[in-house]
Image 1 (cartoon, one colour):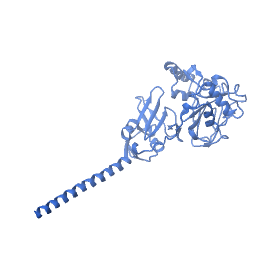
Image 2 (cartoon, one colour):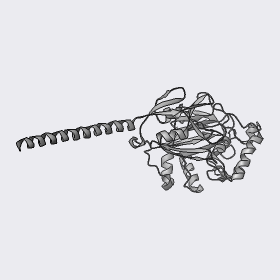
Image 3 (cartoon, helix red, strand yellow):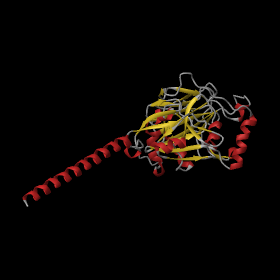
Image 4 (tube, one colour):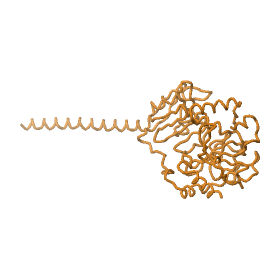
Amino acid sequence: MKKYSILMGILLLAMFSIFYQQEASQKDQGQLTSMNEENSIILLPIKAIEKETHFLLDDFINLVGGTYDYNSVHRTLDLRVNGDTFYFVDGVPVVQKNGEYLVTDAVKMTINEQEHIYLPVSFIEVALGSPVTSQENTISFRHQEEAKQVASYVHSIDIENWDVEKMVEYLAFLEKPIKGAEVSKIPSHLPGAPRAYRNGFHEGIDWYDFASGGGISTNTPVYAMGEGVVVRADQQYEEYASSEDRNQDLTYTAAIGETPEFIFDRLRGRQVWVQYEGGVMNRFAHLHAIPENIQVGTKVDSETVIGYVGNSGTSDAVEQNYSAGLHLHQDLLIYGELFWKYLSQEEVLEVLERIWE
């Protein structure tokens, strides 16, 4: 009986030892899997497009995760990955991340005839912050699983519920883009005014000579309005090749009953975009010229000249009549939304007058 008890004890001890080792092994394996999931090495196929290395967006999503929506009319891309949201417009060398524009002109999407979407490898490096190692037909980079990510989209701005007072308070740091000019009270110069010629609405503020106090010409400097950084500067701008080319775009807007974003951008002409703190961003459009020192990444303030008043992108400019229809068009956004979106036109004018007059 005593020998039987000893044998049973030894047997139980052996079973416990095996069970403990299995548990420890499973625990260690679980830790290893977790580490691998947290910092996976991704191998992504690549191809050369116009001498730059790109990857197919669908391949990226399949390997990394995330979702996207592509609007074939506007040729825009909303990409959600790692808790962040990115926004692209075809032909626009600027990428929006969580409502603010990245300081780079190296991230531009490409869409082929089959509407397959490609992004440059620089997107992974610049927008996701992951160093890339290149091989012959693939790239590799370290990816942190989305569940482990801490989203950078931390602002709690809700301009839908802002009144005039709140909007004035938020934008009060901005000075006038043209010194001595007055805010036009002509309805068609203000945001929200109909634009029948392109089946859309006016998105910004127009500063014309006859409505803003006079003295505006192609020598009139446009100022950066506040402390910020240039995120777009069309130094290599090319005008519409002909009136027929421009009219073809306008005919398309008439056919679909709205202005697609990629066409809208061409109609704005030569542009400079400045990103400020708090998600505020200005698009300066129809510029005649841009100083050579204004480049993507240039830090600016209210005394920095970012360009000169012009008419680029308009029918007059296409006909090389650079003195007709001169004006500055200025779009003002807050975290990717036009500031006036939830205000009446009367409230918009009040905001502008209180900020600048």
